[in-house]
Structures are given as C-alpha cells and as structure tokens.
Length: 148
Image (cartoon, helix red, strand yellow):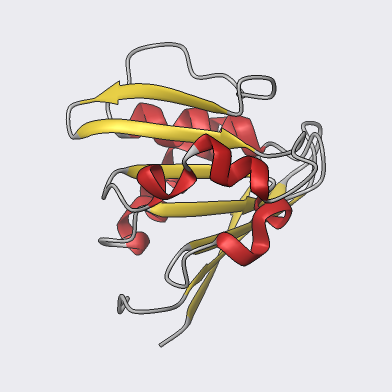
C-alpha cells in the first residue's frame, strides 16, 4: 500500500505542526529519507521532528561526521547526511545496517547517495522551497507498513 500526504508550510511557526503530522502519519515506520535541494530546509525539519520526539540537545547536520546520535525518551535517534559520500561502500564501512535495522528513528539527508541500500519500507519526504518562501513537503509512505 502506498499513501501520499502533502503538507504546505507557509512559515517556520507552522513547522512543529507539520513535524507532528509527519510522525503521526508514519506510524511504526522509523526511517525517513529526505529528498531536497541544498537549502530547502531538510535539517530544519529534522530539528523540529527531533524536538517533537523529546530531543533536548542541539540537532545539527552531520555533514562531516556523516551520522549524529541524539538521545530521546524513546531511545537513540540517528541523523545521517550522505552528501559527501562518493561510493555506497562508505555506508557499509560506517555500519549503516546496524542503524537502519535497529528499530530506532533514522533521518537521512541525501539518501540518493545510497539508493541501493535503502529499506523498502522507508518513508520518502520530498521538500520544495527554501528558507525565504513556503515549503511543500510531500510524504510518501510505502512498503510493509500500512497507513491510514
């Protein structure tokens, strides 16, 4: 089953409601793939989702570290930025499987860099827009987990 949801965020004050909606729609799915151009707000949305999940620490893009780990009341949350990867082998070397199949939340920026390694039931989120205009967030839920 595939479900597609579209959320329009007219300004940053509406981002927490969008994050709450994304989490509710995701159900038990824990892997979120963020597709968007540079500057479209992927990290800003991930920060907001993490806050909804109870993360207290600073959430920032793991551009150079590739993965950041945050603590939440429900366990660790992993935030990936694969922008700098040149080959999928680098994701293997990182041990991506341990993260993706841990049952914990994984937020992935630049998933197209590891397209062949992505779980089938991951949630794809496509964002259009930039910091100075409204954002269009399209959430595509497919795979093993049913949605509403």
